[in-house]
Length: 279
Image 1: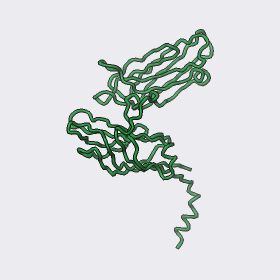
Image 2: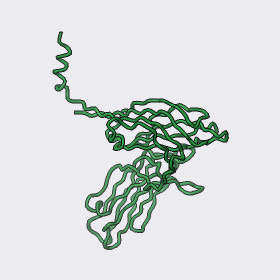
Image 3: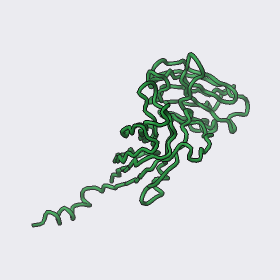
Image 4: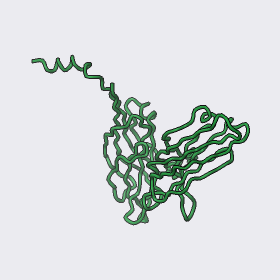
């Protein structure tokens, strides 16, 4: 038995978008992302704060599909395009509506610290014996990190923090797929792990200004002590602190529907095939 998941998404129109150009207008277009991966882009509607796109897409989704996001941007002929806002829908939100989501949705501001993507490959272990006990963190590599530099890449490094101690890997220049293969060891105080948490963060190093956040994962120490963690882990954003702008960024009209089909083994379809092939 096999299951397939499809997402029907129609980007209809926008309204009351903020002006991003000196002319008092904007040149909006939309980018559709599934689990932070770009899957579609609409045409640009020039000089409009109430654009109509009317574009429809049918997307074949991976089994682990989590979320859909539609970003509205203002296209600039010179310099970087301006991000106006976004609409985010989780799989649960879409599935909760039998006929799908259809209507006007307010645009939310885009916080760079929440725009993370990619995964990190880790091996974490706390020996059951030994004094002092040492938390061993093997940071192997990361993949598909968000680009933070104008070159379309980043200069990533990883930071490990636990119980007031922090260590960092080397910086790997100009890549979204860094390979560190470094082992960082943190000495645990007597009585830990308890309720302590290990945090692994990935940052983009900048020679000027502050470093850019690329994502993080957290692990309770007591979990690592009983079951060492090993494998690829999805990078997550910081907890959201974004306030509701009350529709100040405008709204987007979407029609989104999730369709899940189950394909049975061939013998189940044999009676139907015989019926259709009879003279």
